[in-house]
Image (tube, rainbow, N blue to C red; front, side, top):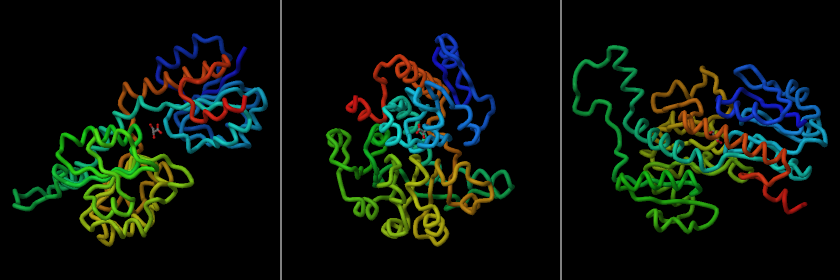
Length: 326
Ligand code: DGY
């Protein structure tokens, strides 16, 4: 019987599918992730691993699992917590959940753009604290999203879903991507260099994967290129932005504001100076957190897991090179 370790309790439809499969199932019962040492112990001898983005899956852990490990399946599209090269080298396919969460993340991105520009949380905090004393001509004003220039960094599935939504806002759309995107014309998006995008955009929104190439893509130099009135939105990964440089840029007015759903580290400590800034709208990595999306992500993760255990190609594989080795 295949042994499987699942690093968190999943939504019930996914748990039901796991229970119905003929598996020796070990499910981490705590609300938080298993500590790394515990993970090392629990994976010994497993054939399948179902992970979340909070679990570090590196070569040491794969070795601790042993040669029987046939699949790692993650309930997320991003797999930067997993050493893909180490998995590929051992012939282990890695499953992930692309596509299913693009609309939810794009919805949240638009929400963050408006909430940040129009100062929702600042105004709400003032109201709750009794500082709403009158209607002021310029009270709690901010820039418009409609009619603005928006720069999308990374025109993959999520970037495209953001672009589609922005068509309703009459914006000028710029994008930067590793390569020209065939869908861009239809989306009304114009390709520009990253520097030109940063210099021209009123909103810069990040939708690239986090890799060694995109580590601190938005650093002090990049922030200095942005307009002092610009707003940065990050729903990708915290590491794409040099957070210390961002803090300085927000404090000194080099940019107007930031809407952030991802941080370094996660969870961000509540006393982190970013959270004290009125021009930051911060959310605890909830881009995909619609009920239907999270249920579907978990189901996809189970589908990938079961395919890997059965020796079938994963429906959604993050390291397809693994099959070229066979
Ligand atoms: C992902 O899937 O990578 C998101 O960050 C969480 O939904």
